[in-house]
Image (cartoon, rainbow, N blue to C red):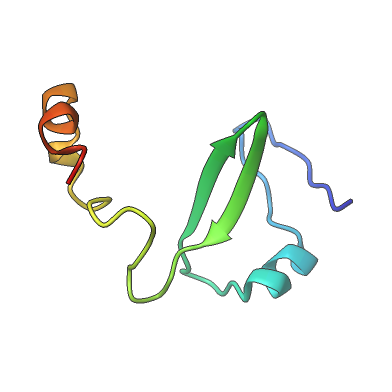
Length: 72
């Protein structure tokens, strides 16, 4: 198991073996997915693609929008 320590400002360094496994470099974006009491850390694709095609449209993230467009 690879671990890191949380600072007083709630920051941590991603350990080098994890950075290497995800091929992370300075400026890369990472995403966190919470599932069943665990957090999965993944590299966001450089082209901006991800599982959520609307992730850049946070202004359309109201409960009404989710209800109206959630099934599309």
